[in-house]
Length: 62
Image 1: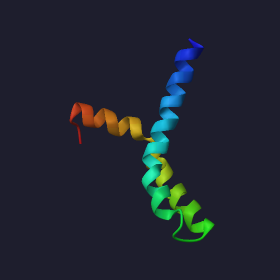
Image 2: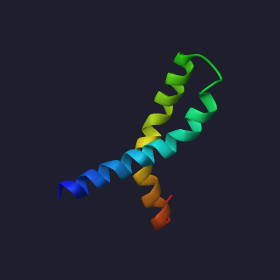
Image 3: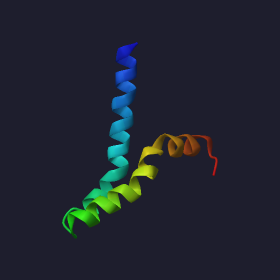
Image 4: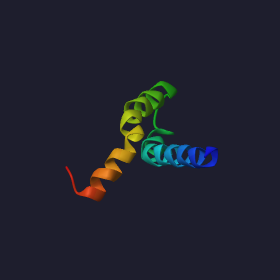
């Protein structure tokens, strides 16, 4: 059971990383550290909700 929970947590965190990758890539060299942290913090709630986006895309709900 612990293995399944661990696997789910890893998949979730990888998904958050995939969702944040474009923001990190765009902001990495373009400004100050404060701007970078602000843009990541702004994108984090949407990134953490990636399972909802996947579910809605699979069920064709808007």
